[in-house]
Length: 146
Figure 1 (tube, one colour):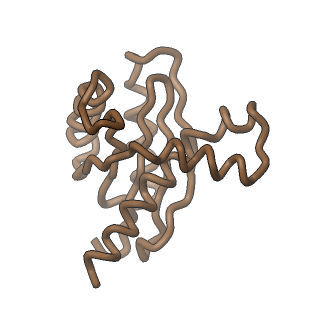
Figure 2 (cartoon, rainbow, N blue to C red):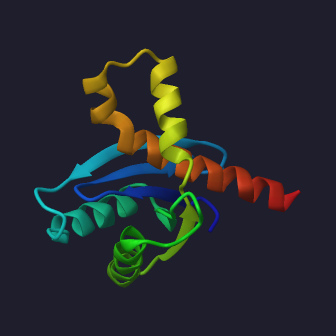
């Protein structure tokens, strides 16, 4: 795993926010938002994730898991599990699910503090959510290592 980066994904109904770690697994940077015309059209999305994983030398993927605030799983969790299985098959990489319940709230707060307009927020929210998903995972790994 040395020298390999970790990719964080925020899987939405029509977008996937993408973030990658630095090689030391300390920080997460937003890379891009992959958009698609409909929820079911995922072929190009998988291909783009594969391309980015190769470009950034990714060794593992963490995928936000959209639990309800109560902790219950809903329909989005089923779709996310299916997306995870397909990603593992397509990329050959381990895909780990991480609780994303508070990432949208944190992304909104960060954009509010940055003074972004509503349009700018809509444009960036998925990428920023992917950064928070990945950063939370990286911070958790750091605590385990100590």
